[in-house]
Length: 227
Image (cartoon, rainbow, N blue to C red; front, top):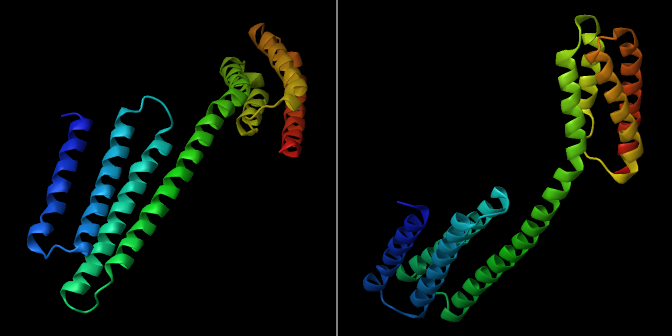
């Protein structure tokens, strides 16, 4: 059984359950209002679930938020309806049908506003995601190169290489145009370090590592001022 069929069966069951009170209680404006808005909540939840199950792109977090919001609205509208209808049946308080309808319109309006705000946030998050990934790709590559050098280095220089590896690991991964020059210097120094490790020229490695640590520190400080 696929997810679409599960959602469809769940929706049919919910509609049947909501219809039962129409045969048990006196049908009036309040009951009809409660029934219609409850159906609207069920269909909203079903629609967001169908959309989430069949969406081929986008972030999981932003997609999952919509069914949760719809479930919250459905729960709230059912709670309000059960409360006021129970008060009326027990002859404690009879809310005017017009005010009861207005209350449900208000809840539906707030839910609609929430969906619109979430949709705007979803688009913003999904637009930023690829941009951040692109900005961090260069530093991730440099960090991976540093990790590879630490594994390939001779034992006598592993301590210096490990310090460089840690500096890459804890540095801000987000690049920008203002950091392009210094990142170019870091990349060049890393390539020189790679050549020395590959050729087992260990004498110049500590000095290169100190230069790399200095450049990474400068980059971190400059990155903070940019933000």
